[in-house]
Length: 313
Image 1 (cartoon, rainbow, N blue to C red):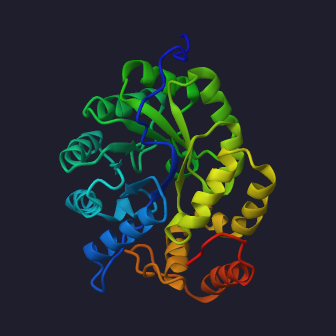
Image 2 (image 1 turned 180 degrees about the vertical axis):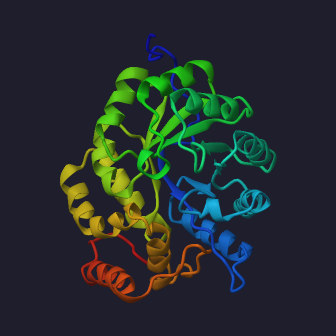
């Protein structure tokens, strides 16, 4: 099998810069709070993020019904009115449901899709390829494949990604969340400019950009979009000293994106800075006790020594 590196890179890319994996706000009855969703997305775009990713892991996609996932897309598309693209996360236990969700998100106005492995069942390489093949073949939208082996138990290797890219021109990017930056190097080596790579874990963003990533699907950007955009831009421009300085400040917060309770932790930070509520859907429960104290302590320490020249409000 040969590399596709001779192919022209995608034009008008959705995948460059900071793409926020937006949290899903809930009202007191734990229904999707549509007005809060619109307001939060608009604020993020005003702060310079490039795109909004809806209904992913941080967006509690697994706790949303099929219609609710499409509601997220429609509300964001209508609310943003073209100011930034909306990317819909596509994940399901059944391949047929993922196909239907991909088609529904395209009809609702999504500009791209973030395609996840199947929920629950851990597929072998043949099954993994078949699942992605079916979903990618069901849409005309540009797609980003999401690789997160620790969360989903399925590790999509660079060689498998190459095979999918050869079969599906619409596969134009990978969200790499293995935590191993060598994967970014391997993907770039094997596929050249054919696919763009985005970092999917907040606490490896600096290392990821240095390895060749051109995008960041960010979590703490829900609370600190200015700092996220500034960090990414410093890294992209190769400003090592200033990027390292901002990264050192941000890193304790960014690590909140990498634990089992990352949804609760990021929503708590949002709430503490006045940009959301702590409400989550069961089986998740809001933080309490030492977990609550620890996250608040991390946030207080960061806010006590803000990075110079970076807006945090």
